[in-house]
Length: 547
Image: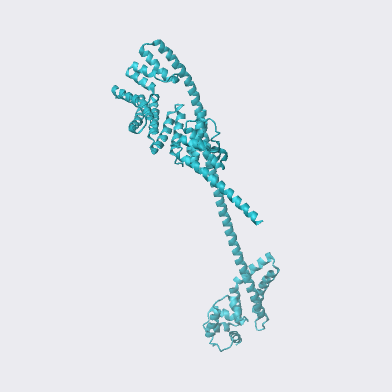
């Protein structure tokens, strides 16, 4: 039995280890492809196509493969209009992955929407790509994203947005030192300013391109030369313009040359034959271009072919009207799309603000609740402590009442105590008995009332002692006078009176609550001339009273 269990455990460990090894191997291959997909997209595509998708295990592996395959297809100019390849990445990276994963996934999703001609969804994905991938250091994807946004805005002649997105792309390409794409983007920015009528800014960005001509390829140079000729610099001689055209034609392959711009430039210089030659070299596939008919009309006019000029102009108007209608329709649609995007972004922002506000309010409520609870606990603790103090005080009062009752009862029973003093003692005993009875019956209202009387009685002990003294002094003034003659203080005379009516030393100490009672008794003995070997102070004072 144990052997069978051991074999099962070993088998399980082996299977898990194999799966982990296979998983790590797959991830390693995908990460390797990611490292060279920019430089060698064809090799990357070949490797990815050699991976069996069915053997991909986790959702993470499938998502990474889907994203890399979409990148490889795009970089090999294979445009997709469906989400079949990218969908696993879209599903997984919606709630997982790094900023770079989000940046790339939404960018390539936007590229698919661009291929489908769905501008609204494309722009939404591109905006989300930048927003969610803001922390990513993948500047190449960010640059492509901003370029794609500019292309969408270019369809609707939104020059301000074209400039804004192109400037962001240019910043990325500059950091990457990708001077070819940097120059192309600068030419687009220059065109944007030129279309806005800001010739100075347009010329400034073309000048930046001129400083990089030695670092760029022929394609990027073609963009620069075309932009330069379209710009039309002031105070530039015909010879300089012809030199630019010659450099353009010499450096750039024919398929990269903007023949319409060459034709328009020759027209401006008055060289009609060169303009005719240039426009004839314009590819026939794009003959229905609006600009083509505008330039051709002017060439016919300069050549004196007015019939052909009129026919060409009619073609120009027909295309212009059609394009204006489409542009207006598309522009209106795009304005609505951008409004929806902005509205959605505003709603998301408001939702986040509301969530944050709710959290703050909840936190404040919690803090206030904690404060009130702690305050209530402190009050209850203080009340509990006060109740304990009151309880101890009442218990002490009760103990004092028992002790005093016993002492006073003995005094009543003592035949030597005079009747006048007994009257005072009996009044006091009556209050003490109420306290004792109420404590025994434990009736709260009676208990409270009795203790209130007891408190008043305790507070009035001085008057009781004083009344005792006055009673004795009224009956025996010579006794009080004799005590005063011996130098006793009023407080010491009061203590002597308590001794006379029968209280013992310990009773007087408890009764008067005097911590110095022992010292006071010693002082009294000393003043009366008594030594430690002489008679008890109480006996001495009674004998003194009788004499």
